[in-house]
Image 1 (spheres, each protein chain N blue to C red):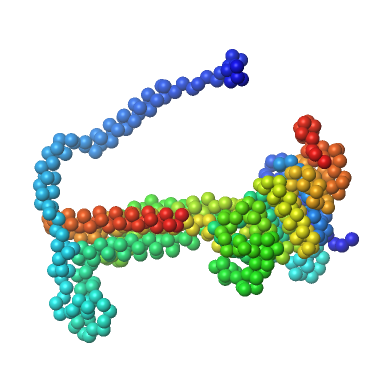
Image 2: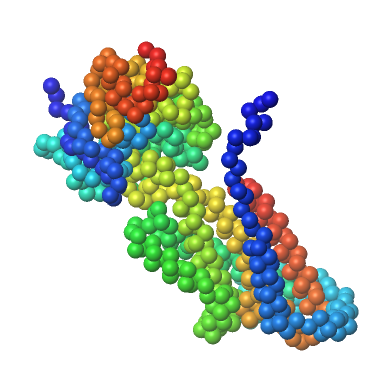
Length: 307
Length: 269
């Protein structure tokens, strides 16, 4: 008989009774669910009635207008310029130079391919700018690297406040302040991304091994030397991974910002829908899906490379 | 007798209203002395070492050091009164070795050694990890001394534990230290590596005239390597003398609360 078999002299602890609590919780969840459905006017009938309309819209979107991408006429190339003159940085004079600039500024961004590339440009510019801004500020927003507790509290709470403003609201404010266009979109993305990156970076900084920080401090290094030797090498992988992740979500965010007129493929999509050009709109959606897939795939690859 | 490198006077430390970690510790350390600090966990060994370079702020007392160590004229100055600039000048003369090695894992072995020169290096270039050719030569020589020259360009976390501790010693040597504080330097290493690391610490101490303070919890290692043993118990010095003086009574005083266990597990002599 092993020692484990001698249970007789054990004083058994009473297991907790939790049955009534579980029922109360289930009832509460049911009430919350009912509240949410009633408040939003849950109406399955309307959904079923809408089905024919959906089918109608789908049939009118079919086939998607592939010519928007593959047909050269969709790009409205100016006939006065050769393709070489238009695409390569060759010197042009007077009128021709004007035609070239006008095409690049007005026509190209409104083609499906141009709009897609502009969306990527917006995401790249907004994400990189935000990372550059967030990097130094995150050191002030981390408990272990902030020069002073009051600085830490101030930076952190201001950042929390700014982060709670939705990107969409920032976009609307910026559009009324600096006008429509991709630049406005970039600024809105920068703002929204910087506040999130500051929080993520600061949390990564707070997670560094304090022993290493102590060891570098003990060599007589000053504050900035300690940051660059003990803190930065420890956080670089997570920083890069956060930036890539934000780039991914900024591709989507840039599209949404396009809906309110801040450039890129999103702007094209809204205008096609508004003009009932469903085949063109469908093509835009297809391009968008392909874009998101490519970005997801490459960023996953990139992140693996870093970590 | 020469002027001590470190004169600790009535050093104390307590956190808030809690029980004191150090109570009125007074000790002198001569140049080139190799001292083992013994005691149970929580006896105050680690706090004592960290007070000396103020990684832990002392609550009271003085730590007197010759002002020549900070390239100044005059007699002794109190580490406790240093401003941030003087504190950095003092810290760069004090190498520190840790139980967990505390290397920057993602940097190379060489960069870790070079971090020992941060207290001397000009600010902006060193922040960008640019060091002078002379610093690099010294770092490579330091690596050669600890026998790790071939590993210079490997990442620090790619070498073994014992090798990492050697890198940490090279980093300390890079500081041109007057004092090396080693806080349980062999507690994470196997017995064979422990001997090698302590032997290396004693050797560099002798060759460069560095005062070495090593906290250990293995009595046998302390007896074997040190010229002087100091026993801590309850934040107080309960023994200070040569290893030969560590008789059974002294050992009991150091490990006071555990006399029964000492009988159960006699220390081999």
